[in-house]
Length: 540
Image 1 (cartoon, helix red, strand yellow):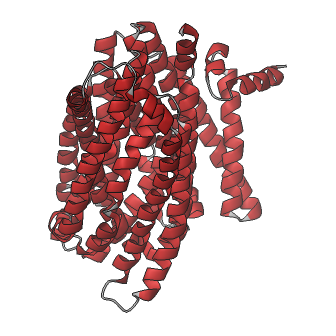
Image 2 (cartoon, helix red, strand yellow):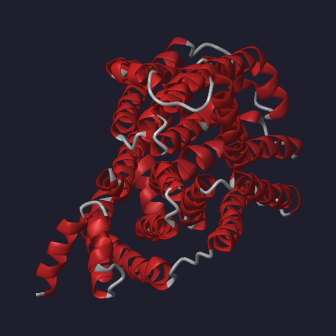
Image 3 (cartoon, one colour):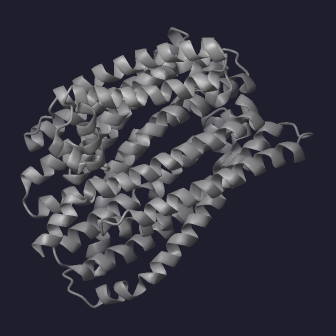
């Protein structure tokens, strides 16, 4: 039994990396399919799509987004306590909660789409894509409980595979439907709105595909669930439901406030810029660049933090149940360090290669898009760190702190964005600055709470400072390589790919030369032993 616990505890980073790898694949697919979709819809259509998606995302968070975390956390706790019967009851109560909350939110968005899009976001054209996407919430609510069940048992593979299948189907349907709807409704008053609705149709069909896969896997688990029903339990269904709701509600509030900044940006931009004389088409064009290009690109590496955070919560819960304070601290340390080793170079790469990346990925060589990415590249670091620290707070039962910190940051964010839009007239650049400062404030507040509660302080030199130095050197070298290759070949794509490949190798070599990662740390990381052997060869 002790050996099993040891393996479970030491496996969390590998399982998290499986989920992180799937998250990166999902984000890359999302990035790749958005390229043709952006060209089909144009910045205006992507503006409608992103505005509808922000509204949908808020509905998803309020109804069911946090169910996987809550279910996985409770199942992990009950399993560690040996109460498998209670673990089964957590799953069944989760299904009930998902059906009710997901169903209610789906109905609200279906029937309230026109009012929400027109009055709150000043974007009537976003109502149609929102209606098409609304039923996805109910699908996600139930599917999230399935994912939470597997994650609570330390198995990230079903979630990972289902996410990839979901995104592949999502991408294929979105591209086809966007093109088909734009062509089919070309004579309509607002064809870009119909095209955006085609894009959101992919969200629904992709979710249904993933749901079917997870349903099949859950049927295969039915014998285990029947066994759990007859195993030891200490709580009846009413107690389990109460416990689930008490766990679920703070996580919902935390995620809701944390994710609300994007919707607040869209709403404030629509209302304030509309008051300054910008037409809906002009506003959607700018929001298409901000949300459909800048935020889409910077969110790719943040997927690592989201996945590692999701896998870390059950593991932290298990260590706390066993009273292993050092185990909790070690998990926090390794997760944050592994995350920063990836997030910091991504941010520096985006800063030094901002305009070439935008031209390579989106075919957009305008000065504005490059400036936006350069100005907001640091958001990758702050959002990655705030996402992980939020997961830590949830794992150590400080969900209320997570809510409070996100609310404080959101309040500051609203004031700053209002000043930058209304008084300083910075336009879309004001949204970028607000995006960075929001995550930064959350990071600072979360760090204070974690340090105070756990008497924990993250090591700075090898977690932040050395990776930052290596990343800056890598970024400057990558820019030089880009300019040289571009001058020789006159090809932006070839220059970007060459600069990125050389930069990645250089960064890895610099980390080893600076001794930013110890051998013991490498052994705990995914592919760490392979990297360690390669490093020994290089040092010879």
